[in-house]
Length: 141
Length: 141
DNA sequence: TTGCAAATGAGACTCAATATCAATACGGAG
DNA sequence: CTCCGTATTGATATTGAGTCTCATTTGCAA
Ligand SMILES: [Zn+2]
Ligand SMILES: [Zn+2]
Ligand SMILES: [Zn+2]
Ligand SMILES: [Zn+2]
Image 1 (cartoon, each protein chain N blue to C red):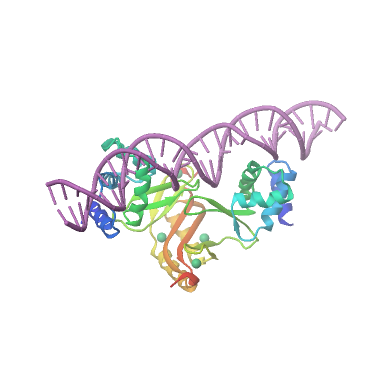
Image 2 (spheres, each protein chain N blue to C red):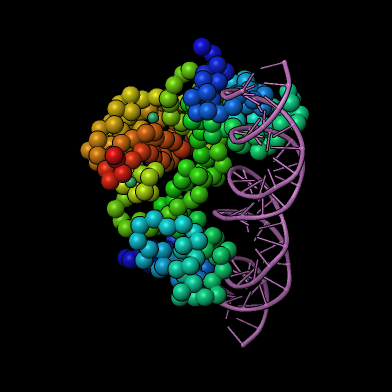
């Protein structure tokens, strides 16, 4: 089942309607390489449907996040960025404050440890976000 | 050396001036319990000096962060929140999405592991942020 | 004290994100 | 398939945290 279909199932489950706008948005999001923000996605969608509105993109992005097709993260300046989940599952980020490069990683020790910590506090973890900031190898003097 | 003095030293080092406004802001920040945002701090400072401007608070907060007297974090909605460093050092957060409670924790296994991951990528970590989201014990059905 | 750069207050401004609302399009009932 | 109620949309106004501007004030060193 491909990503677009998955989204249609999600819409059906939630009694939301399958519309041309939403379809264009998922397909475009799926075609984005790497990280993008709402405005970049809007521009991209406009190439297919010049009448799409900014509001529709801003309204659809949270749906894609809920459907787990898109991952949202928040930068230091508070702006939201997204990336389409190309099936490579959960991962965390290292962000270079100099050149902006984003390195993705996944460490099972950390993942596991978080579960243990949550348990210790009787906290029911739904998700988490780990961002390591600093300088990447290219930017280290 | 108390926190206010520490800030004065910081100002001197950076050739910044010690002013009444900055003094009121540090002292007020130091008296804040738990987490607060810029507007809450502004209100609090206004009780001592009704003429303090929003801009001064917004200009001073980054100084407090640089001076390591205040810790800044960014919420899921992009807003910045702060907390005065009562000397209890680095810690990460668990945030209850239901009631908003913030649980602080520190886990050395995770702290250590992050250093190792950064090293593996020749990444020079300056700081990091880990936020675990979910439901606290009081909000679990 | 004097002089000047730094800092301030007040408010204009920015810009991502949200809200509004009339017009439109979806999709289930018939 | 057609009809109808409602979810969705586009266009635009509005919000709100945070930043910028600039005339005025303040700190501080000579
Ligand atoms: Zn993780
Ligand atoms: Zn870099
Ligand atoms: Zn940590
Ligand atoms: Zn709770």
